[in-house]
Every structure is written in structure tokens, then in C-alpha cells.
Image (tube, rainbow, N blue to C red; front, side, top):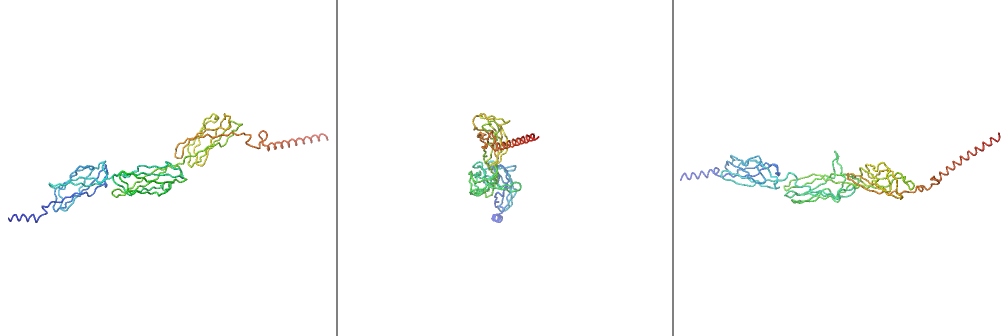
Length: 408
């Protein structure tokens, strides 16, 4: 009986020798955070012995489960001894599957000591490295804004993530840095400011940020890059931002007119020159202007070429082109067909046909003061006076010569 009592005392007085070690495994950290699909991630597991006795031969095993696979590492790692109330960090390298779903994914771990083992699921957050909000579409209505007119810019943003994005804010930057100088872009927001907000955007949904813009009246015709910044918060509360550009075209449609500037043709003179005046009445400049005299049954061209290259024609200015023609028609009013080829400030090509009206006038009626033979009456009177003076001079001289002969 004495030895039985002694054995019981040994069990009572030395519980730490017989008590089971309490092993737990948790994630301490992982890098990068969050994990990225298609990339590797290093995970540190915290192994804790919460018991009162040392734990021997503690095995930590990673069980295969998508989207994580062991990458250049052992799937089982062993601690020969883990002291009571001690902890230890063990790290594993994983490859994250390309098609990993964004959000928390389970990492299955098995740990054992002696003959007992436990399996547990640890969670690793996976998120695409790039922004999960994308610019889905950009539209401008109308597609080109004339100087001084309004247009509507719409930027569509889509949430491609499986989680909700919150507090979206888009800011248009109507300024640009040229060299070292900050200059204003030639646009003013109408009806609202340059910053718009959306409270939340659910997975797979899209939202529009719409701005009403007016181009300055003196805005040059060209393509302008307007920068914008999109900020938002992901499901973890992390602030994200995206900076990009949208293109807005300012272009005034050229307004070209044409007329006869001058001519020496008339009812009496059917062969001569005409000078065409080409006028740019629009707000946009014209480039690479060609003036082409077209064929007609009413006249024939006497010029060396029927094409005149004018080149640039700026807004509110004109150029001329001269041609020699011979009128075959017996009519006194004919149409001069002309084709203009040109490009606007944004290199858009145009062709425009004109039928310029040429009215032939009676040359005898061009000056109402004309007298005999096309000379004015004043010219005739002067000629008569000069002629009369010459006649009077020679007449008196002749009389003096006769008197001189008589007295001799």
C-alpha cells in the first residue's frame, strides 16, 4: 500500500511532466500584403506552446489547397523541441494561383506532436496588384467642341473586383504643366465643379462621372489632354488612387466663301483675267489650301495650270487666285466652277465646290462721263482748247510774217 500512495504523490506533485503541451498555430504576417494573384507570397506562421511542458517533434505541414501551392520550399517543417510557454516563427513560400479570387482565401495547415494532430484553416487576403477600378469608357458629346461652345464629357468607371469600393472621387485637372510653367487649359466647368463623388460601387457595377465643359472663345483648335485623378477606398479601408488623361478635341469647322474680286472681262471683251477671292470667315485656320478651276462649256482656260496652291489661310483673312479665260458662251452671266481642297487645324480633310457667278457688264456704261470714242467730255474739251490755242498761235504768226513783207 505504501508504494501505491507514493506513486500517487509523484503524479500529484509533478503535473508538468505529464500534462499535455498546448500547441496552436496562427498567421503572424505575410509579404506582400495583400497577396497578389500570379505572384509569390511569404507567410510567417506563429507556433505557440501554451502548455506547461516542453513539446517535442512539433510538425507543421501545409496541405495542398487552391489557390496556394508550396514554392521552392518544404511542405513540412519540424521543431525538435518547443519549450513551455514559448513560441516560434516558421515561414513558408507560396505561389498564388493566377485565377485566385480576390478576398480572403484559406490556407490549410496541419500540425502535430507525438500521435495527436490538428488541421486548421488560416486566411490570407488576396487582391490584384493593379487598381481594380478601371476606366471603362470615355465619351464627348459632341465629339468636337467649337471655341466658345459647350460639350459634355462622360467618364465611365467599372468595379472589376469582387468587393465593394467606397467613397469614389474624381477630380478633373483643368491645368497642365508646360515646361516649368503651370498654365490653364482652355475649358471652364459649367453647372458644377471639377470634382464629383460616388459613395459606393458594388462588384461588377459601373458609374458615370459627367462634366459639362465650355471651351474658351479663343481656344486654339487642337487636341487637349485633360488629366484627372480617381481616389477611392477598397474593402480593407486602404486608400487607392489612379491618375490618367482624357482627350478633348477643340475644332471649329472652317467657313470658307468665294467671290470674284476683279476682272477685265466685259460684254465687249470676252477674253481676259479673273481674280478669285477666298475668304476664311470661320474661327479655325485652314491649311494646305488648293484652288482648282473646273472645266466648263461656258469658257476655256488660258492659264498654264488650273490649280493654284494657296497654303495657309488664317481665320478672318483672305487669299486670291488669278486665272485667264476665254468666254465661249454668248450669255452675259456665267458660273465659274471652282473646287477647294484643304485641311482644318486638326488635319481633317475637306473638299468644297463653288459656282462663282460672273456678270459681264457693258464697258461703255462703266463710266457715265464718257463722251466720244470712249473719251470723257472733260478730256475732249481740254484737247479742243489745246488745239484751238495751237491754231491761234500759228494764225497770228502767219499775219506778222505777211506784214513784214509788205513794209519791205
